[in-house]
Amino acid sequence: MRTPWSPQRAAPISDSCEVVPERFTVELAHSILRIHRSCPTDQCARRKAAVFYLYDQHQHANGARQRRLR
Image 1 (cartoon, one colour):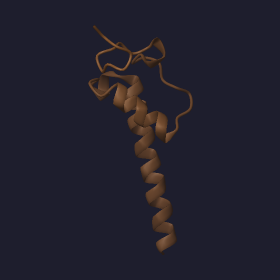
Image 2 (cartoon, rainbow, N blue to C red; image 1 turned 60 degrees about the vertical axis):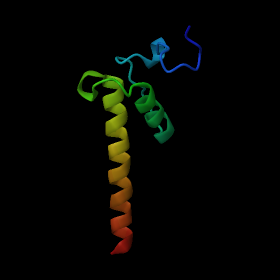
Image 3 (cartoon, rainbow, N blue to C red; image 1 turned 30 degrees about the horizontal axis):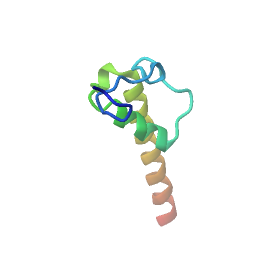
Image 4 (cartoon, rainbow, N blue to C red; image 1 turned 90 degrees about the vertical axis):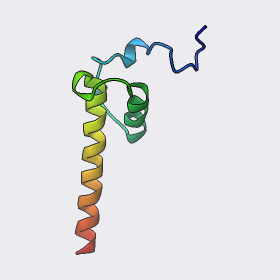
């Protein structure tokens, strides 16, 4: 029997691989990566968008840090 907190439960429609949020936060991106951890990144638009968002955030943070060090 599956329970609401079981990792085997199906993702809600809003968490389907095709539905990509219009706006991300770091917390939302990490949540998506947890929910879609078994999806191949190249086949899951939601996971792919979250990965690119976090990568972009990391690059932006590192760029700002580099400018401050100079």
